[in-house]
Image (cartoon, rainbow, N blue to C red; front, side, top):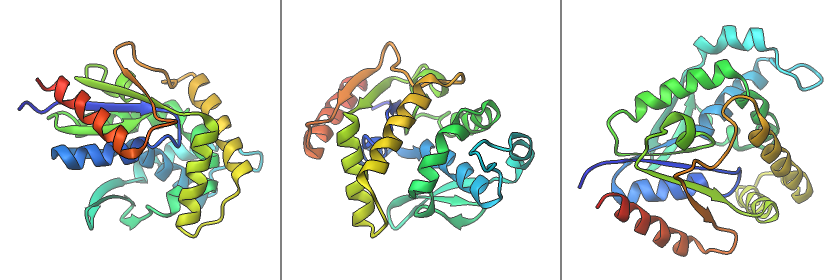
Length: 227
């Protein structure tokens, strides 16, 4: 069976990463979490004081530092884990503070150019599942299978809340819902690579789907794409 490129795009907190990881594991493909890459740049910026007091970014300093930001994704105990300059930051990049700052980082053209080039190198040979905001429109416009995932903002906020509480991290539903709605607006209105459904992408609204139902749907689409 030929190896293809699978691009999964969609709104924040709709389970893209989880479904992409599960699908990659089941079909023996490599999984790349592009959202974690942008979150890692955001974490670096927060740690190095590259945000002004008003929340704006010190773009000149960040662009100068970009060459010092090394992001790697490795399998640790069977899970894709993100490393920033050699440090495991998988937990740190999932905090609400990073969530509140990642969209402005992701709008920066020089950040997207650098990370997109890295992502395209990762997927040159096929056999890859990649999720993000612009995978099917910018990173891999010729991907053999494109999926656009969405769910209501309220459902997504509840899922994010449950995830944080399960990890023992502080969480407030109202704050998370506001963050989800703000990120939706920023992601879909940014000038560089805005979030949108590719013309040839399959729409998956998983608001009322179980994980098992979603996995069955994904596997069917994968099998159809590789026939």
